[in-house]
Length: 107
Image (cartoon, rainbow, N blue to C red; front, side, top):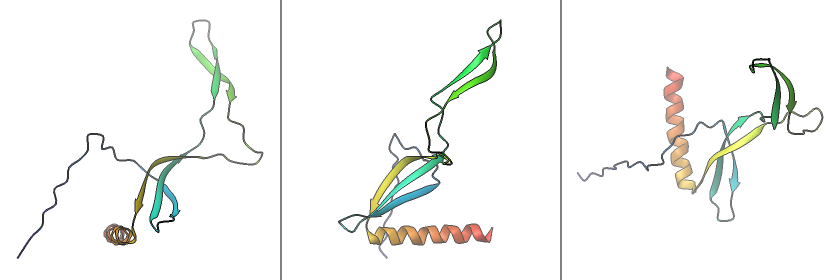
């Protein structure tokens, strides 16, 4: 029986990312485009603190936040990475994910 063996080689810059979601669509070449993101609230542009006479930080006195519409919560979606794949690869990934989910559900 013939066999095939795959060896995995990691790039020096390999760095796994935590993702919370994905956004994408089908492109004009009928490929699936997926952009993975993480979410967080916006950081202020600046903060101001009172200092004690000895120079220690006492309390926050002002926050200069990015402007937002009234009654709107701003969330930043930081795009971690993206991939483009064909339908066969998408099906293989779907099946692999289904297998992993099944394993977790049994635990």
